[in-house]
Length: 391
Ligand SMILES: *Cc1c(COP(=O)(O)O)cnc(C)c1O
Image 1 (cartoon, rainbow, N blue to C red):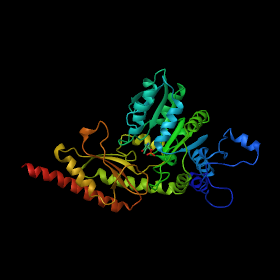
Image 2: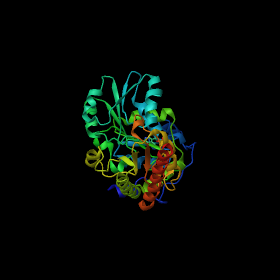
Image 3: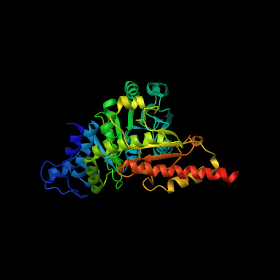
């Protein structure tokens, strides 16, 4: 089946209602002692106890496993919980973990704080290293973590090259594939062992639930499943239902996010106040060649550096810009139907000028451009007010 057909038909009941109902359950009752004793083994996707899931979660997990091309998949309470559970499953005291320098900041903190306190040493490699990852591996390296494109600065990674080197050396690869979703890129098909999504973003797609997903190869799966069970991680049935609801329209939404995203990125590139747009689908982006080679689509998330300006008025001008936006509302997360602006300075780019992360939603791009155009004019005016004030 092609992916658009999968999105419609995966994870649905064979009979009866179109959608899997919301099963609310902690206790599951058994008729016979034999069934009760069998339940103690917690066979995957058998109803035994609420913490191990119900058909609402089982169907969603089966759908995600197929979309990812994995042996199996699990749904977790957040994207960060999916990252944490995978790394806890794979790493032991004394192990070495490598992460790209552009990694999602809470994942970096997990590595340098929580995991470090439990005997795991973390190193950070340049995201553009490709096959040169071999130079960063140590005998104790157990996991190479990948995130492409990187958070905030959107560096593309040569995932096939990294996965090839790691597999040959017996190092496990884990990829955060949230930006692409399995519709644009399937890490497991490119030699990666574990594929993660912050499903909070595009899978749920409506900014109303938190969720993470883990899909893995058959060799790795038992470690992941065992850790999730031992840590007691599970999600509520309403959230699972929302994940399945979001999945049905994921293909349509991604197509529009990508189309709007490219249009906005191209428009931004031509604005005098804009120094650089970080968005791999742009032909001028340093990661464009890898994106074109490996990805079948894109999303609506990008970074924008404004032209460097005197630091004195920059904060005030940024405030004028973002507080006056009508459609790009200010807030964390992304991947919902709505446009968002997230004005944080990526680590190490403080000298590069004002930064905005934009999530381009499903609105009409003409309205989005008008909103940003007015914002850039407010920004320029606020900076100019300073020049006049000083003369
Ligand atoms: C948001 C995000 C996460 C974490 O997801 P939550 O559901 O918010 O915990 C992980 N990775 C990336 C790339 C993200 O953008």
